[in-house]
Image (cartoon, rainbow, N blue to C red; front, side, top):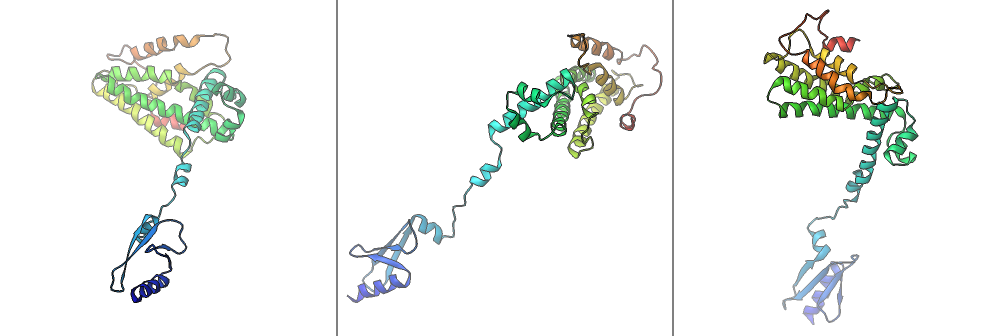
Length: 273
């Protein structure tokens, strides 16, 4: 009797309610876990905590992770955004940067609400398209270096790949109302210019590229020869792009067959203009 009384008193002090005849107790104020009470015969009580009670006693907490997962865009939302940017890039090339945004949504296969949820206005969409084209063109430069051991062949490969990315379409796009000095755009432009400068420098060091040209000459020619002519009557004129680019590249090889008028176009010249 004395042992049971002492055990009951200790359970009361710790806030546990013993189940009669079972030798076990359930912690007060908890809805899970189990506390097992064992009488030792000497008036002391041994308890074993299990389940969430043990976790709580060890200072553990089951912090919810749903908020972290919710912060990541869903895969379908990312796909919709990519489709919108791709459709806008195509239509900007075909019809110019003033194409109706409703047409962009239709080309992307999404509703107008989805388009405006991702890009609230034309400036935001144009920003993303310019960023995407610039980034993809920079990647083409790296791929050209990896694919071609001859520095001039790498430069040629890049020029043709840049044409396929429609880098010339950037010119009419950036002439509209949009932040051309946005830090993201400036950083991506610097990456592209550095990549092209590397291609030019390696080709000149190898004696494969004439030395009276500069990086700006390559970028200007690439822009002019790949710039789309939206709304013109000559459909299919793009099929001549790679032909004319190759003529341009042939004129860059050494030995030079003519003396170029004026001075080489540098990156500083392009930025000032």
